[in-house]
Amino acid sequence: MTDHGHSQQEIAERINAPPGRGVLRDVVYGGIDGSVTTFAIVAGVAGAGLSPFIIVALGLANVLADGFSMAAGNYSGTKAELDNIRRIRSIEERHIRLFPEGERDEVHAILSQKGLSGRVLDEATDAITANRENWINLMIEGEYGLGSVDPNPFKAAMATFLAFLVAGMVPLLPFLLSFDRAFQLSVIMTMAVFFIIGALKSRWSLAPWWRSGLETFAIGGAAALMAYFVGSLFHP
Image (tube, rainbow, N blue to C red):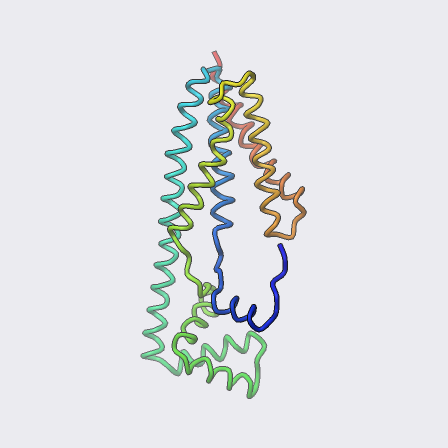
């Protein structure tokens, strides 16, 4: 990832339109879960020695039903988070209206923790509390540890579902295309997806791409081994 610029225009554009948390967490979450759960079904059914038709049927059902379920759950969870932020905002609005001096003291304490002191601290407190919206935003961040940019439930749900759908179809492709040694191909392709997801995730972290890839590879591989082992217990 390239560093951002520091011209006056670039600074103004970033500060006036902060991107928020984005959908990175939702994409990684959906992609890993989609590949893990679908391959778990493939591995479990294959371990039990059942036909490829059953693998495809159960796999497609999982991709669609579980993907939608995860998207719905993420939508509801993100909306609950948004509702909580709105609830806290209404509390702060009421407190500022009823207890302005107490809320001003809280702003003073928050700014003091940020390293301001003396006259600068007093002037900064006056400047913040002169604007009600800035006042509330500072309280939400400083008192509750919440960001001022609201999450988007629909974007979170769609990102989760699409990532789940794309990654979840990979373990099924060898069976859908009727390849020879379909299960072995499914193992290879799914393990590659785990590694790729982890490697791509490293673009937003300090970890080397290979370490992040191996970490996700290990997590997905462990889930696949457990599913195959359970399925093999029912092999006739």
